[in-house]
Length: 88
Image (tube, rainbow, N blue to C red; front, side, top):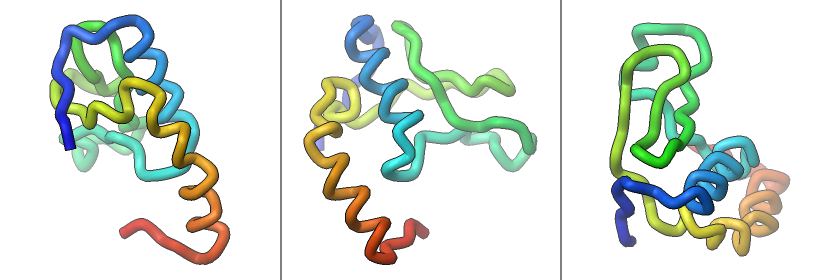
């Protein structure tokens, strides 16, 4: 799988943030999430991924989450969950 690093385009930011809200698979979360109990789901900006709660920043993201390719699998992920698939 290819990894994407910033800078991100506005379209890539939108795709990633939509993925994070879709709830079809585990979101990218803060690497310091054990230090805080509030929201730890990362959001994208043009210069990286950021935690809304602390100063954590991440630069590596799977490329297919940045280009709407993940939407091709949205129904498949949803069916897996409906049939009892649990993320661990």
